Structures are given as structure tokens and as C-alpha cells.
Length: 240
Ligand SMILES: C[S@@+](CC[C@H](N)C(=O)[O-])C[C@H]1O[C@@H](n2cnc3c(N)ncnc32)[C@H](O)[C@@H]1O
Figure 1 (spheres, protein in one colour):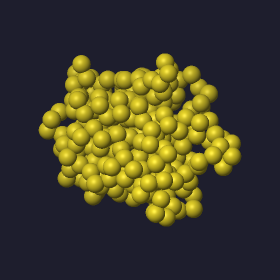
Figure 2 (tube, helix red, strand yellow):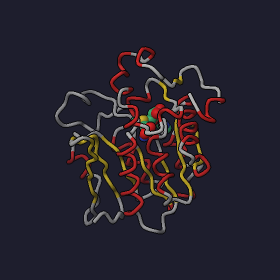
Figure 3 (cartoon, rainbow, N blue to C red):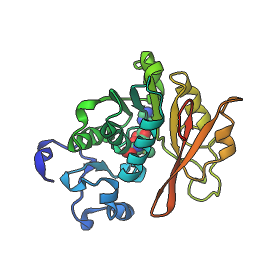
């Protein structure tokens, strides 16, 4: 590690791998793309071994942040990132400069420490309020009053049967939270939400949640000519 950030103590499950020889075999593919994931990787970015699989690569996170920044109504000044992970999206939201405050929630304490550390590397930690815990609880309790001023972004885990193998991903068997569970809980908090989901997500299931007369927009986010994931924008975004 280098710079000012190497004086912090990393929890035992957190690593900054410098050489491929140190990297577990199932992460080596991700590690070889480390600068696409975090351009400042060499400044001492921290990840747990599991976080590598879920982190949103920086160019994709920046594009999403830009789309949300320009399409959300100006009355919304708070961005809540419900599944902060190692900070890929949270950092991009803070860097966009669009939000008065970014609130970032992460259940796993070691992963949350990575996100905080990585946000310091990118110089945006002071714009973010961190919560350790369950975002389904936190948004409707501690953050409840902020709902009318907020846009919620969620990049949940994509576990469940058939995520990698099925042509069409069934969002009702997504684990641990189905689309209906996430939408149901988060829509108690705000009507404006963006969900980051597998590119093969079942579009009929996405559309089912849209009330008559309302619209929702699906955006595919690509890297090297292939869709990496999609975002569904629910509520009054102006994406034209
Ligand atoms: C796909 S990752 C998010 C990656 C993140 N967008 C990034 O770019 O680094 C999903 C994260 O959600 C966390 N998580 C799972 N259930 C949660 C919950 N109920 N509340 C908050 N975080 C949760 C997991 O620990 C994991 O870090």
C-alpha cells in the first residue's frame, strides 16, 4: 500500500493484493481488471474476497451516477445507497457533486470498512454518512423522514437458482431479497428508486410493479461492448 492510507488497520478478512501470487484463484480474473474496477487501486484500495464479485466497476458506476444525477427531480437532494458493498457506486454518487448528502448502508462490518477506506482514497468520505446494518430496516426507521427528499439506489446480492445459467433471471427467486420484497420495502420510503439487477432480468416481472399510467425505464450498462447489468428506474425520472 502507499500514500496516507496505509496507516489504518485492516480487519483480517480485508486485503489489498499487490501480486497475482497472493490472489485466491477464483478472484484472479477480477484482480487482473483491478484498474477498471477502481482506477485508484494502487493507492491502497481495500476489498474482502467476496466483495470483488459484487463491486460495480468505476466506469459503470460513474455512468449510473451521471444518469441519476441528471434525471432525478431537483427537489431530491439526498442519495441513499442501500447496499454500499466496497463503495463502487457510493463513491461515484459522491463524486458526481449532485447530492447534498449520500447515505450508504452496508450490513457486513468488514465490507463497510472497505467502503469507508476507499471513499477516503477518492477524497469523498466527508460527503457520506455511513450506516452498518440492514437497509430494509434502516430506511424505514432511522432515515424515514428523509424519504420525500431522497432517491434510493440499490445493488442487492443476485443470489438464487439460475443466476449464471438461466437465459431469463427469475427476480422472484433472487436471494436473499426478491424484487417484490425490495420494491415493497423501499417504496414505503420513496417513490424514486433505481435497482441494479442482472442483465438477464425478467422484464415482465420488472414491468408488473409499474402502476397504470406510469412509466419505468430500463437502462443497460455496458463494458467492452457487452451489457454488464441493467438498472430499472421507477418513479419520476426524466431520462429523455
Ligand atoms: C452486490 S454488493 C454491492 C456492491 C456495491 N454496489 C459496490 O459497488 O461495491 C451487495 C452488498 O449488500 C450487502 N448486504 C446484503 N444484505 C444487506 C442488507 N439487508 N442491508 C445492507 N446491506 C446488505 C452485502 O454484504 C454486499 O456487500
